[in-house]
Image 1 (cartoon, one colour):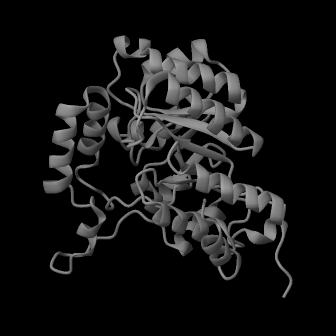
Image 2: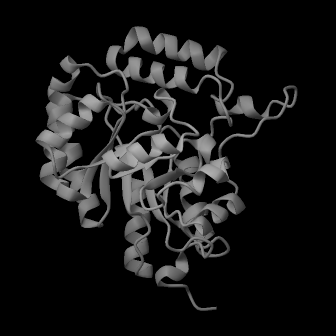
Amino acid sequence: MNLKTGKDILNPNWPDAKWNVSGLFIHDALIQLLASKSASHFDCQIIESVHGSLPVRWNSGRLQNTALNKEKDITIAFTNVLKRYQELGISVFYTFSNSLLEKKDIDDPTCNFMLDRLAEICGDKGGVILSSDLLAEHIRKNYPCLKQIASIVKVTMEDGKGQPAYYRRLEENYDKFVVHPDDNFNPELLHQLNTRKAEIIVNETCLVNCPTRKQHYRLYSEASKYLKSSLEELHEFENNVCKSVPYFKQVDHQKPWRRNCNLTLSELAAMYEMGFRYFKLQGRTDSRSVFKYDLTRYIFEPDHVGPLMFKSAWPQ
């Protein structure tokens, strides 16, 4: 059997899918290794963009554990990591999706320095995933080259789920928008969305119709802004209130079963048939093995290439 090359290495059920992959500043070695191997060995680019953040005030959606040592670490991160993504032809998006930003927060020097470096290194191959209108205005004024994606946090906090008119407003104001994971199971709504701007989260592990999603995002945003005191509240919430995290809660045989928002392969294929092409893989807080499992099983041809890339691509 001949080794597959070009687009033949991609999952044949969605060969033209454009993947926005989590893990910036966390799983960079793995992402870059897989992208590099795919380009050099198979002549195929597998990833369109990556997203993530350092642990700064504007971050949200997930909390980063990466340590930040101001000028030293931030210079290393931007000089080496961002330039390498540019060499690989992969766009970079910051997850600056904190929904609680105030005017005083917009002057944060570290976050603005991150934007300076993103605009300088990536230009129009860079962007921000956000939920704050204040931040969106700031970026449009000072960093017009950077693209903007409306975050799932924004859709959740503004109760946009299930509202076609709401998504149309996002379409007008942003380069792309993330569809609320619960709406992935609403075909009537999906048929009304602009597939050229909608981005679908494929492997969201929160429960469908989670009643505490908004509270969870608020705690993430507070923890990014206020750190220690809010972190304690976040940990208390995840340990005693949240039904989804940690994920072992979802496999307790003594509790009624409820499915999470992970798309089955047939559900993803159906959305692809509707015309959706922009797909997002979450995983900033996943272990390297779990992260790579999702990365290889969704992107690659599943019988030969996926298992081969999973087993061979281990950063040294």
